[in-house]
Image (cartoon, rainbow, N blue to C red):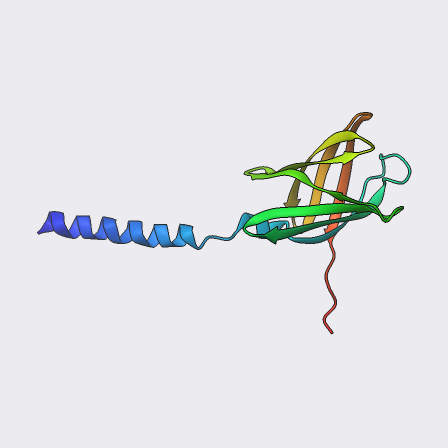
Length: 130
């Protein structure tokens, strides 16, 4: 009887933990939304803009728009890991890999441009309620 009770409790706890894991927060939601970024070390025209991340069909997608132009650049190869996220963009025919993470609702990271690393920071754009 004692063995049955222990087994029952172990199975019960496993079920509780499993259901908690199934309903754990979606890490993509951490990045979802529009972020206003600045990159002071970037070349002129690439120093500010917005990054928008969207969840479509259970996949994180997004695009970047520099403040100095209307051109939209799609994100490529978005991957989320324990340390944050990795993705890339193609600017003037050059692939630029980007590493970023969120802490205290501020997105920070580094873009590995052909001219060298460029640090950036971004704050989430909060939509005004109507």
